[in-house]
Image 1: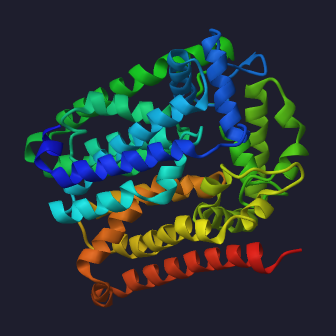
Image 2 (image 1 turned 90 degrees about the horizontal axis):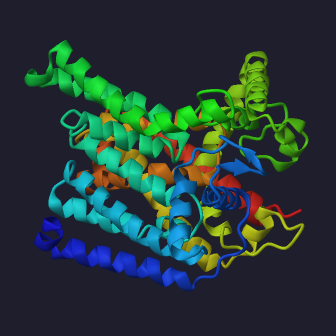
Length: 438
């Protein structure tokens, strides 16, 4: 609150960002489907005193977001409007956390520029109106990143562990990001003389683990009791298989999934193990294909903001998502996608340029890309990367585009290859959507 009082510009931006999000309540949303319907039904099951799917106890999806929905439904009497209102406020709070992170990297002026870009980023606004994990996960992960970027994890390791597990119970795919976080913390603690003793480092690690286990252990124990195993989720095997099987395309493929009877298996542990077995067998027997699919997954990860837009599209039976996307207003497509294209291209180069805590930002981006490479790619998964690419874009603006010319050849090659990859992905998507219509 003191920050907002001292900086009226930040207050104005956050208030305007909230107003834009609340104005989106006038936007009609279609009936819940796919993941949104799954989260909604799980929330309803919680309100009846269980956590079940199709009448069976489940651990298919971690409970963070369904619990969030159930809490809102309990106080509001149900319906999407209350969720959209609360997510609007939550996303503005996330923007404030993002500004505080940027203050660890930039001066006040450039941190403010980053805030403006992030607060009015079109897909961030759209996801506040969707029954999806993006907004809640964005808040939890941004809170953990603020602790990380401010080196507060080593000052408050127990609280940091609590926040990390909270984010993990919203999205298990966040798990691999702990690797660059731990490496960064270990290095920073080794550099600080007062915490460099191995005993001090070990003690803080134990406190972090204790905080993390405090949050996650009730869920693990519940799963042991109800389904027979200490697991975070039983979705990992099927997600791994969706990305690595003979019919895989790199993204979710309904036709291939419908052909696998394991998706109808009621024993989630049995299905999870068999999915994982089939996926690992495919990877070992087809290493070249696995690598090819990995790059396809990354392509889907960085493709346009189609999922943010398609959520609000009314589709008729038999109408595919590609056809629905193709029929959207071109001005709307440009309004949402052009800022995304600009931030990703500029941000790629900016992350490669020198800046404070660059290794941490780059490490977290690489960890997320590696997760997608292993499992499956969807366009909405790049939501997690937007904060880092906004930071990178602002870093490039500060340094100037000409600063790229002074970088090492390795940096220039990495930036050029990355830019060509992004442009190729977007060009191919544009061609398939609007030029090749069969």
